[in-house]
Length: 352
Ligand SMILES: *Cc1c(COP(=O)(O)O)cnc(C)c1O
Image (cartoon, rainbow, N blue to C red):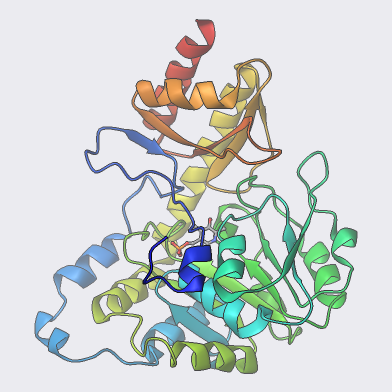
């Protein structure tokens, strides 16, 4: 508290991201970054970038980037909105659609940024309990609401919802439904194909995870042109140029290299499946993941102690001290070598 702070600032409880230690001594399996570099086409685009053009502002509409994204999803550029990371896109969506007389609905176990945006924009919300297997009960979302937001696959559980269930939710409300597809490329079907059929659907994706570009800060939304227009009105009242010239150029190179993208995602999925099997052997319950991480719970050892012991061993994983999941760990899929190091460390920790 400080005498100069606004009431809003005093009330905020900001989101706390996973640790980003600057000494680089850890095997980092805590923030769902890719263990693989971005496409070589991205490296080329940045190397060949004409630095002279940085004296000019970028295109405020990011037209070339929107066209590349639209092509990838079989949509038109008018159905695309781009932002400085999908967190920014989500924040704009909260402000554009969810400040309603009726409450926003999201799961009790979900992306922990959602309640933070609600506090920032003074949005009422209700949390809908996942079932005992951490699955979404779509029927429970059939109640009065001013909007619904779901990560698919869910975070931090990694569990995916079938497209038919998403359609059920879309049909059950007149409000906007945001599907946050940060992890969709690791084996879940995207709702992008539903955008033409549902006026109330906004699909949000990011370059941070499946495109190995967390450091570039690029995310986007897909929806019908009038939802996109709402996001543009917010953006143009906030920051005219959220996407810098270099980021735009690198992102276009990434999205045009479909082969590399699919190769990396396939490797992550293969490693996820072999790591899941090894963790099961070590006595973990591994929730069925469709993401680039696994959510696990050990039958005997508390998660808080395992998190600490792994950190001592030079391996960072994510531990959430939150109701229902405070005995779980979220572990990002690293390279095969990193996952082997994790299994070795856990084997030794668990035998103590
Ligand atoms: C990582 C993540 C995001 C945000 O990613 P950006 O880096 O801001 O694009 C959004 N939603 C979920 C569920 C995430 O896990």
